[in-house]
Length: 201
Image (tube, rainbow, N blue to C red):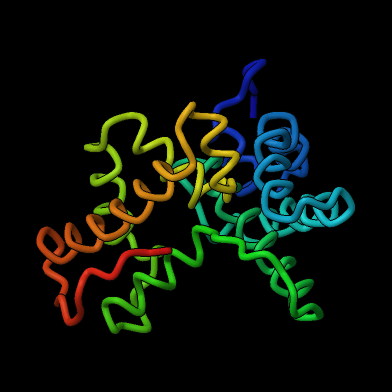
């Protein structure tokens, strides 16, 4: 398979499917800085981050195939978040005085509880579609704040610094937008609203 100097995601995914280990090195070249940033933002520990990155590419190799992601970037980001959050959960299980870390998975879990459906997760393509539509309709700054918090797991203070927004404003936007998202999913997605719009803290 002839590769261009800058292979596309689909070309790299095709290499995974061909069981060509070049896919791993190309994935690292293209997305290692981004995945490292996500993992480091969750763990704040260099050694744990390096371990998670190693696990990331092994996981990608073991899951592609059967998965054939349209966006390798999104797929790797999803994997590194999951791996890093699992590492953090294991690490925190040995501690009692840990700082609260809000991740995309925690927002996902809250939505699951809200809709009273254990099988309904953000892995579900329909939910993902509705969330993507909702995000696309937000003003840029509000969308950026949500993505920084629930995608990159940035702290409120980090989001405030990156967006030039006061911390109290960031908290208010996060609280309101999660409530609005729940309402949106209820109204547009047709999911039963069985409880009030409690805001995420």
